[in-house]
Image (cartoon, rainbow, N blue to C red; front, side, top):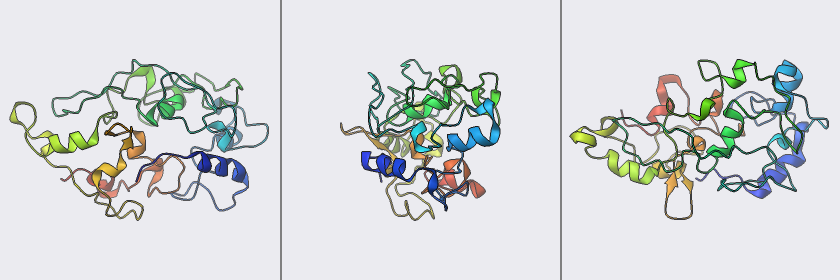
Amino acid sequence: MKKQATALTALAALALGATIAYAGSTPGSGIVGSKHDMYDLAVKKGADYGTPDSQKRVCAYCHTPHHKVDSTVADYNPLWSHTIEESTGFQAYASYTFDGVVADPLVGPSRLCMSCHDGAIAIDQHYGIPGTMNTSNTHLTGDSWGEIAVGSSQSLAGDHPIGFDISAAAWQDAGAGVGGMPIFGGAINTTLQTTNPKLTGQPFTSIGFDTKDGKLMFTCASCHEVHNKDNQEAYFLYEKQEGSAICLMCHNK
């Protein structure tokens, strides 16, 4: 299952807008009222979280049916309406226990995620409208417990690695790593271990972003379902945190 939004999906979401009565903050209940509903955040939390869209739109903060934002570095652009994080200098995670090769930590949808989670681009910027987010609001600009800017200062050094080919990583993880030490204990599940009906029985590689050149890249979307539809847990996670199910979905521990 490749988590790539299609143009049709984006347009349908725009058409539905904020009129969906059943959507909300409950995991799996939809984008409206979720933590990715920027209009709702601005209305309920005030100016520190930006200015509400004048037409009360929800999907428009990220998507547009026309005039998408172009980028010279983004390799994935689902009719994007938001300023794109174009830096190619993000620091990637590195560890003695990680042998994955990270050519671009922001490959695929991860670059779009960093367009809000970099702590610099205003979360309410869209449709060419300048963002008005309060930059002193550390919940949006900081990278500490309870703060959302995981890409602050263009660093992902303290986060689960992204931007590596998971098919290659799975192969490496099955044997000995650097200096003969088993990587991550030497085990990645070949089939996802999950109760999520959208992923049950799927191979580990199914959570990768297909670059169309033979690689399946681990991205933010490998763990997170940004539209709050197929997730089992808050933080848009595909599996629950209870019992570390989100970790054990891939890691055989």
